[in-house]
Length: 497
Image (cartoon, rainbow, N blue to C red):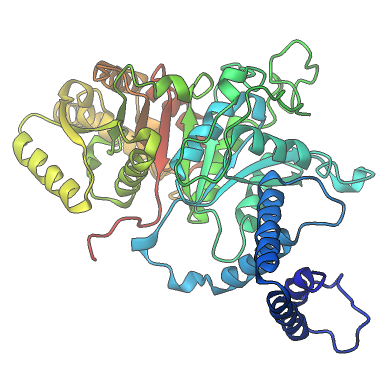
């Protein structure tokens, strides 16, 4: 019996196993096991079979009950050996768009206010990589020890408590922007690296502590592919050593910029721009504070997922066949493939203007969805009134009436640097246009959807326009409920077999 555990330990090259027997190898262990088994059956076959059956039963009990032991777990060594071997075989040079899957890095400022978003991203990542990232502000030179080591247990307990399949990556940096850059560079291993960055939306709404509410934080496993067991409702929820949410009574710090925030709008948009420079897809999640997965997916009411795969800030470029639109459609389709979301119906909104063939556009988009094997209901939405408020349409009318104003605007644009003045769309959008588009989206919500997928435009090249860009996104998504602003930079869909 002693040679049975020594055989795998020797084969795994565990450095802590150092037998004194001179001729000890995994070959001699296997030979000893076979010799013992033969002698057992030669002596008494019935007793030998009963002993082997009892040993297998004991192994199963130990494996599934997982009692605490002081001699370690051989299963961890086996898993490490196999994972290392297959990670080395996972070659990024052999990646193909046909086998693309979301590998998500979700940045979490405080898990207490992000329970709904954490569980939702666990659904949308499906079978891909999922990493929870957190940036702790500080300088290791001024600290006596690493402050992150004591936090890992709380984060891992959070993963177990929410029954999600996720890794945890924490980093120490002098700013949130630098910390996110660190995590984008080093998260993952080998061919398993995040290709999508998910951020919460930057606004002035106060977060809500949902981790103390068992109805919102406990999430039994509903995915049939999951191997985790259902949460025991009789078990007391674990204690999490996370700081209080921003705006709570027992929180005294005012943050780096006041109001408890650790980053400003300029740095927030800079993080988005950095991720796009690193060829990472970007997702901004807004209004997920009160997102309750169990209520949204209740069988008593139909579930809808609304998709707007067009850049609503630029009506002149209303195309459904660019990389970003395809990425948006792919994420919506992936969410619909998850078992708990399969009953949800996708509604794809086609924005049309007067004078264009509505039927032809619907047929073209329907054929595209058929080729991509995406089931969705296509709805045409006229938006002539909203487009009339866009600066380009107003500029055309203004050009016809008065050409002098155009000359003055051209002179003002030439005063700025060429690089910083591109693109100029972000500087000319009016609040009236954004509010009109926001109302257009709200008017189509009958019945209201569980979540919306919107097109996220690129940040302006001029860093001075970052605050304006964020203000435009805030007006666009105001009162829309759970909304994802999505920008894709890599191809994710192909029609080739």
